[in-house]
Length: 228
Image 1 (spheres, rainbow, N blue to C red):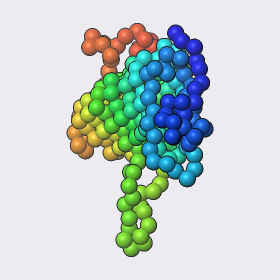
Image 2 (cartoon, one colour; image 1 turned 180 degrees about the vertical axis):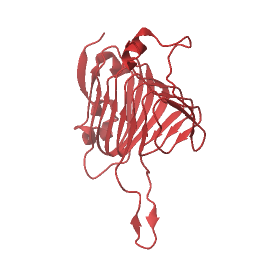
Image 3 (cartoon, rainbow, N blue to C red; image 1 turned 90 degrees about the horizontal axis):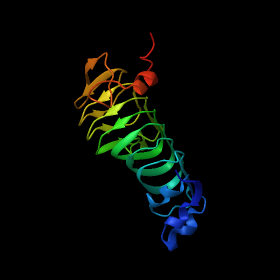
């Protein structure tokens, strides 16, 4: 267990970019300073304002943040293990609750809110794409039609399979399973398995366990299945 410290993100950057990021900070266990990396996008007119918080003193994993123009907050309550690349733009907020494990994922948060509930299990090569990063223009009005703020909500105890893609404005219900290779473009019902592109529900009335032999006592308590 290591001490919680606060560090300036500017200290992680090349000398010629540090003055732009004086309002950006990392708060987390001291040992995580060796497990986090930052890169930065193009210069912007306004200084970026980002705050990264890792609250579990026993955190395991590697985190990479690409900080583009804008501001945002990332709060990670889980101890991992997790291996995640975050790409942050405009006004973005990400919260990952306790017990979430991520083998490998890329999370793009661009003018969006992303919330991940506790005890999720993510495989590898997963992409969470919270918003379009280029404009779609209506030729009659010459105005963008995809410029609104977006959100993604992944409820507690969700299992996401290898190479799945999670798209904007979806809600994945509690205890759901997203099969490998699925591209989620609409809401997912709780206690269900979804597979395919676009995904369809192939089974309902299920939950899942980290062990192939069944729910642990902890999972039963967490999900409320230990009640008489």
